[in-house]
Image (cartoon, rainbow, N blue to C red; front, side):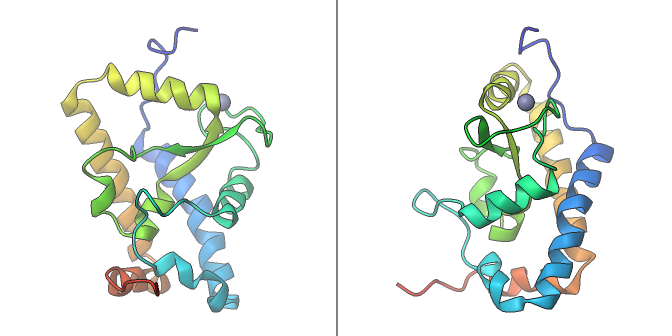
Length: 161
Ligand SMILES: [Zn+2]
């Protein structure tokens, strides 16, 4: 199928379900081993701060090792980091690290490229509305859990050099 004609629009119900699948086990894991997860509250990711392999592993587990877009199985050689909220956009640096991490998914390289192409063919309004909805749901999930609210307090704490 032509990637542009295929819709990559992320609906609210699907996004919310995807977030719950990611967040609920995370809160449980954080509660039982806080030291392991402190890095979630560090400074936001920038160009020199790549996403760590432990978070990739966490996403793979939450997605049952399936692509976020096509739901087919992912392998180590086909899996990529999907920036559902695009890395290059003005929105990305204004998110906390936890918000950034919760906006990531795993997808096939070809599906990842398809999403990028699809975005290029949408109106600015469509994308702005979708992205705002995605962020709103991420924040709702964070607000459900006092433990995750800590990310707001640590947002501006610089990491040790
Ligand atoms: Zn796929």
